[in-house]
Amino acid sequence: MSGGDGRRQPRVLVADDYAPVRLDIREDLERDAITVCAEAATGAEALEGALREQPDLCLLDVHMEEGNGLTATAAIHDELPQAKLLLITALPDEEGVLAAARAGADGLLDKAIDFRRLPTVVRAVISGETAFPRRLLGRLLEEVRRA
Image: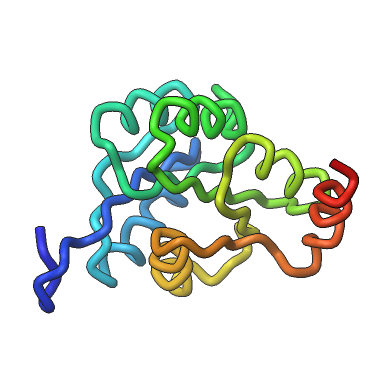
């Protein structure tokens, strides 16, 4: 599918174990001409859907009841290194930022984000930017400097 300007619409996989959150995300992405090509409720479903659909970006909840989002992120990163990976969590903290970066994520968002802003973040990450909370980047920089 192409957007109105002839460019291909970005394709996103959405993984969250809470169906209403997936619906909110889908609605806000699709309202902004971003295709949700697959949905998943578990880490295993996310990996399966990513391998099948080859999305541009996978948006995964860190804490899904069945299948950790970080584990799924690492597996998708290994299998589909070209796919961008964006995690969401209800409790972003410094350790979460480090864990997300180690798993191969391109960003970590607070679930309290206004989902209407999500299309802008998704497009930025697809284009090569990262999306980590600025207030938590200090710890990530410390880790990099120590390495």
